[in-house]
Structure formats: structure tokens, C-alpha cells
Image 1 (spheres, rainbow, N blue to C red):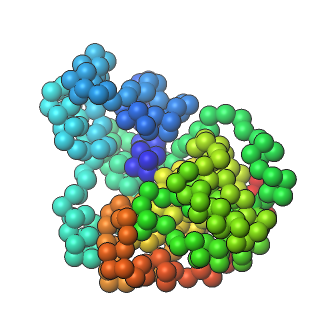
Image 2: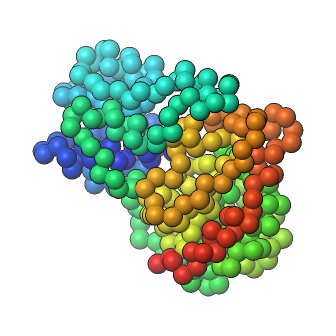
Length: 317
């Protein structure tokens, strides 16, 4: 999800900077929601089960060029078989692997958006220095999604993440929530609903657990209306950057510099993580700490996160 949301500035810049251009975007079906309703895309294509069918569709469109922002085996085959002029994102796979294994920053800490835009630079595309794009699909209402106690300003705490080592232990989430000045909404999927229930029970009415109770679009809407956002390395936290809200992003086993996914073009942000020799242990997260101590999350400074969020009181819509 994170990789796809960071392609949106490229699409926007293409549409706005090339007069008369028609922009199509192709992605996996599970990521189509990121581009549904995006005014900068003229047509959304979805990868088919058969790569041959996908290639046939691409050929039928008679494109002038392809901008490959994935740079994997599938896209190489597509470019080879369609023979369409192409520009490709430099993935730096080997350098990233060495950075992970050697615990050294061998990849320049350039944001993924800027790396993507470099692929389109030969077409004269330049960075417009605006945030990423996400367009909420429906006109949601806070009164239908939240209790009255949480409708006049809140902190959105995104506690979901695909892997265990990206998630902060419940006890530390509880500690942070207790010190926040505003009501707190917990966001995530059904997989972290029990975590949310545990946190809400420990903190009390100040915390409302919306994990598993809202659709993704509703969750994004709630994020867009928050005074501030706290979140782990997960898709919803990255989507939150679309709304230029204060974001405290919490990093455990992964590091933003390796993937180039630190908060992008927002006015106020905090990146929380600890500098220890075993970090990062993974690019994308693991089901458990390989060394058993989970210091990367257990030693994060909670006070820094609380102070950042409390400074934003009254800054929401």
C-alpha cells in the first residue's frame, strides 16, 4: 500500500505538466482503491491473472511510453514484449540488501517519491513539492462514526501493521494514551481489534476502539479530521500524509531511510525510533524479534511522542 500511495505525485505531475497528456495507471486489484476517484488518472487498469492478458490490454491501448515504478520481473517482461518506449525507477535492490545485512546506510536517504519522479524526469517532469494524494470516496460524518465524546477533536492512533515487529507493545500504547490531552481513536483492521479492546479497557472512556469497525475509506476520513496522528510503519499512516496533518511515525524493526518512506511534504512530523546495532533486522517487518528482546520498540521514548501530539491540540478542523 505504501509503495503505491507514493506514486501519486508522479501521476499528478504528469497530468499537470504535460499538456494534453492522457495518463493510465496499472496496479494490482487490491490497490485500486488508492486511485479510485483520482482526477489525475484518465483510466485505471488492473493486472489480470494471466500476464499474457495484461500484455494484450496494454498493447491495445497503443501507449507512447511506459513509466515503470515497480521495476520487477513482471514489468520487465511487459516492457520487453510490448516494445513500448519506457522509463524505469532505479530500485537499488542490491544496495538495499547490503544496507540491511551490514547495518549501513548504503542507499542515499532520498524519499521514494523523489526516486519515482526521477524515472519521469526525461519527460521534463519536475517535483511540484506537494504532498501525496488520496481522495476520500464518500461524504462521511463524524456523528455516524464516533461517540459524541470524540467528535470535537481527537488523536488518531493507528495501531495496525502487517508484522509484529512494526507494532508497539500494548503496554506502551496504553502509557502514551494515558498521557495524551485529547480523546484517542484507535485505528486498524480486525487483526488488531483485540489489541484495541485491551488498550481501551485499560485507559477508559478516553479511548475509542475503531479497529475493525470502520472501512478503509472511513478510517482515512477519521485520519483526515484528526488534530494529530500517531502511527506505525503501515499503509494508513502513509496515506495520512495526504492531509498535511501532524504525524508522529513510530519505527521498530524497520527504518524509513532504507526504503525512503519517511513522512513526505508535511509541515509537522516526528520520526520515533531507537538507534541500536541490530536495527534494522528487516525491510518489511518480521513475526517476532529475532533476538527476543524487542528493544527497537521497548526502548522508544514515549514522552517525545506524547509531547509532540499534545502540542497539536486545537490544530484539527
